[in-house]
Image (cartoon, rainbow, N blue to C red; front, side, top):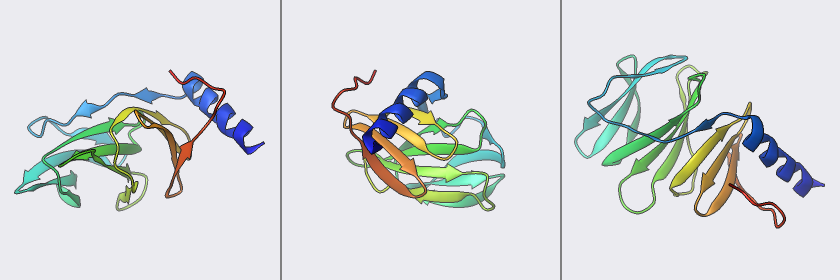
Length: 146
């Protein structure tokens, strides 16, 4: 029954949920609009400061980043590239200050699907769900993902 729910959830996500493509963060580009205000990424020595309305809320150790933005501007997934596969972070701008969650696994994303209380991540390694601080690999032997 649990596998059926996972497959049904993925099918629903693929058909109805917003899909986001990575946006390479040009540090000289303008701010990203979110529900909490304007987010900018500022190079500081060997890292990058994530700033909301000019105030730093996270420090990322990376040479470059890419981000996937929820269309509403409420959440953002950031890929932080330093060596090897990127570190993944989730920013939740509905919280004050913004919540910063490290996903705990390094992987290069090829797609992000936003849902109400979870994020479905697509990578070359497979599909994953991040919900309430837990990253779970989604497995199905009968479904083909596109």
